[in-house]
Amino acid sequence: MPPSPMACYAFILVLLQIFTPISARLIRPVTNNTLVSDGDRPVQLWRVGASLQHPSLQHLLLQGLIEKWADDATSSLVMVREEDVPEVQAALQEEQVEYNVAVEDLLSLVAAETEHKMRGRRKREIERMDWNSYHALEDIEGYLGWLNASTNGVVQVLSAATTQEGRPVYVVRVNDRGATGPKKRIWIEGGIHAREWISPAATTFILHQVATNPDWQRTILPHTEWYFVPVANPDGYAHTFTGGRARLWRKNRRVNDNALPDRCNGVDLNRNWDLKWGVGASQNPCSELYMGEVPFSEAETTGLKYFMERVGPLDLFITFHSYGQSVLYPWGWTKDPPKNAKMLHRVGRRFLEAVQHVSKGQVDYTLGGSGAMLGFASGATDDWAYGALGAKHAYTIELRDTGHYGFLLPEAQIGSTVRETAAGVQCMVTYMINNGVCARRRRNARNRNNV
Ligand code: 0X9
Ligand code: ZN
Image 1: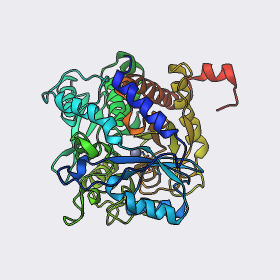
Image 2 (image 1 turned 120 degrees about the vertical axis):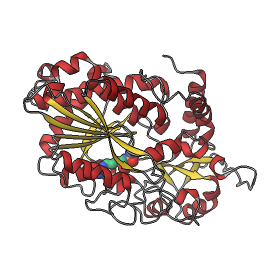
Image 3 (image 1 turned 45 degrees about the vertical axis):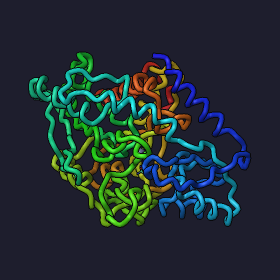
């Protein structure tokens, strides 16, 4: 489907503004319009002439005054709420860090998209899911309900936890009990970060393949047992569908302190798991990287941890995030490679090759240890699954794109993204089941040693 004129316009606008040279644009004055609620006030995108590793940027990030959009060795793009402009401005000026406003009102780019979502709500029970648009939690749960009721016990929908706002965190088990041979245990987590909408889309699409595609059912299902968490952060995800600033929400919705503003609600569920807890995370509830008061302080992380422990050691763990197009393996808290880094690398490469193949060379991913590739961050699910649970392979996969649309990946890209992602996972799993069959022909044709 070609992108809508609105999407093209928004994209061109973002590009034009992002590539305007530093200092060439004026910062809009802070308004004090009491008729506009905080949730609708602008969020700006700033281009900053320093990496997020710069101490003053780290400080602003951990305080919650800026949020990460993109980062490289010498510059970064960060989100700044309109009311925080003076404070961030003063901090950067004091450190003589250059900056300019790349996009004055990021929310104007998402307004049309979110309004359309609110209008498009469907009834709860749905038989057919599609991957042409982003779906509200009700739609996703409706689809899970339908799978549960119509697949003869192959798909079971179970609840791992109840969130602070009373929503279940579902785990979907797919297992063909008729097939009795040895099986690889696979856990796929989606939607732990609320605004990364492509993640639940990819997770539900792979679930759909495993549960309904005859090819997968013949070649993969007899040798595997799957656990899917389509939306690990349902409160956060539901919040992102309420319009305005909420579209860019990352954490869950825990109320940390009633006296604090909305941005100080929530815990980053991907900093709350108990493995080297506290590295590259914030102790300040107002930061988007808030790690929680103690490890596993949240219903979502505790519930999933107990569920995973009951399932036992996994052969493959994947958590889908966006964006960046990278396949990351442990550790997040150090640059030192884990024991079997070579094997993690080899299996991860199968994903890259399959995506390249399916996208006809248009989509490239990078591969490596997450601490080395992204900077240190602990308390994430992948490190816990690998280091505490003992999963043989554990990955964070950052889906499309590389930063043009970022978290606001257009709906026109959902279909191709989920298809290439499913092909990537299919290749990893086939490789594990068959001890290396997937993509062998393509690999041999190129370079036998390049694994
Ligand atoms: O920082 C994160 O939680 C993930 N990136 S995101 O932009 N989607 O927020 C990456 C997590 C990588 N894994 C570890 N650091 N263990
Ligand atoms: Zn994420």
